[in-house]
Structure formats: C-alpha cells, structure tokens
Amino acid sequence: MTPHPAASGRHPPPSGEGWSLLASLSRGLAKHHRSKPFRLRNGAPLVSFTFDDVADSAYVNGAAILEDRGLRGTFYIASGICGTVDEHWRVIDRGQVRALHAEGHEIGCHTFSHVSVETLGREQLNDQCRKNLDLLRQICGDIAVTNFCYPFGRLSLARKRQLKNRFDTCRGIYEGINVGTVDLALLRVIELYDRTLTAEKLERVLRFTGDRNGWLIFYTHDVAEEPSWIGCSPDHLRSTVHRVLGKGFACVPIRDALNMIGYRRP
Figure 1 (cartoon, helix red, strand yellow):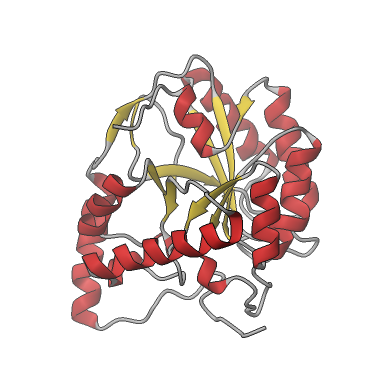
Figure 2 (cartoon, helix red, strand yellow):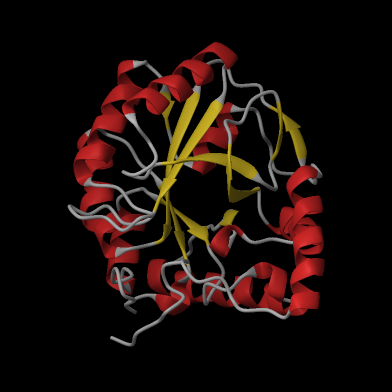
C-alpha cells in the first residue's frame, strides 16, 4: 500500500500568505451565504450518520454497528486514495467500497484524490468529480453518487456554487443542527468524536433536534478501539446509535433524508 499523507484530512494544503487571505475571505462568504436554500418539510426529527475519507475501521466497525440495528449510513469516498495508508489508518480498499454499496449504504463523493476544492479551478473540480464517479462505477456498477462532502471542510464561494448544481447536497464540517430553512450546499454537522461528543452534549443536541424538528447529521472518520483525534470508538458509536433510536428518531442516509424533508431533484 502506498502512503498517502492527505488521506485522513488532517493536513490542509499549504498556501502563500496572499492566497490564504483571499481563500479565507471566500471561505467566510461561502459559509454564510445560502447558495441552495431549502425549507425542511420533514414530519419528524431525522438523524444521519456519515463517515469521511473512509478509514477501514469505519467499514469494519462503523458499518457493522449500524447494520446490527438495521440502519445504513453515508460514506464519503475519494476513490483515488482507496487502499492507501497514513499515520493513523488505512483507507478502505475497492472491495470494501463494493461491499458497502452492496449492503445498502450510501456512497458519497469526496473528490477523487481528497483535495481541497478551494484550490481548484472549475474544470479541475469537474475532473475530480468525474474521475471519482467513473472509478466508483467501475467498482460498484451503475451507482448513483448524488451527495458531496468537502475534503478538509474547505470551500470557496465559487466552487460551492458549482457543486450545488452537480449534487443534491454538499456537507461541511461547521457545527450545527439543520433546522428551518437550510443551505443544502453546506449542511451542518455534529462531530461524533470521542474527545468532543460528551454524554451531556449528545443529550443537548438530541433534545434540540426533537424540539425543533431538525435534521441532525453526525460525522466521524475512523471507528477504532483507540481512535484518532477525529474518530470515535465502537462503544461510543454504539451508544450514540442507541440514544438516537431511544428517542424514536428516524435514522437514514443523506439520500433518504432528502426524500423525508420533501426535496425533489430539479
């Protein structure tokens, strides 16, 4: 396996000072400007479990924990780094991606080579998405890949506007619960990390989701007994799933949540 230092998303690409200032401004505009506003019309609270990159432990442990409760998740795949390793985990290989799809989990787009979209031009981003879809179809057959996640959580206003026309949703890493009128081009999330999602915080976000009839999206990376700082343990994922189901909330992948909030592709 070939080492791939960007696989885990822990090391944003380096940049010059001038470029960094412009990128930061564009990122701020993208964060606050609703590029794809949509009014949620779900009849009850919703929860989605999502996994970025994806570490093989998210396949081995994460998918199995969901399946044990009859649930499915959304796994954002950068197919060009499948089977590579970094200092914390091994990225799932093509056979595991195929198995995820066969078990009914959603496969989302995370670019082809796990690259920050704010560093790309229009045609480069189109190429990244096309190459990812082409390889995923080689792996999984005639798969539909309709939802996107920003690698590193990085975005620009121009690339966000571009992606909103290609995908039903784009998921970020900005914290929040999706309620009322949301931005489908930058869905909000709650970290499912051992170090940040305490029992008190979990109870708080579940209560808010129920009170506001919201759409709560959890995200994590690895699911290991000794997780990375952006991962969770199997016990933590298992207990979170238990608490969600105990509330009676529907728990579905992003693609199915879209039907439940009343979204219809143009």
